Image (cartoon, rainbow, N blue to C red; front, side):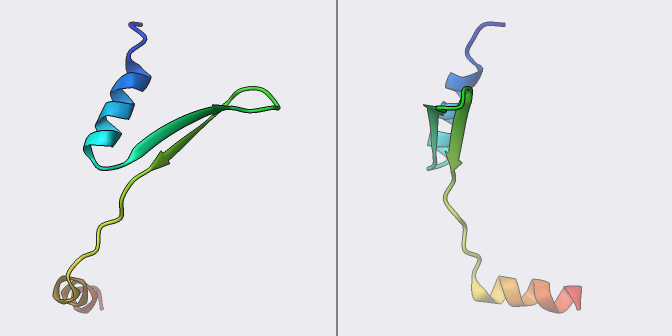
Length: 54
């Protein structure tokens, strides 16, 4: 009800190193684009998880 939801989302995404964009669509409505940075795990950690899953 306060109208702060989108502003808070943008702040949280920004703190995580990402971005949140909003655009109007010609067909009507809006489009929101959320981009977050990927995380690479160390090779040792990834191979340990693979051997546990096998």
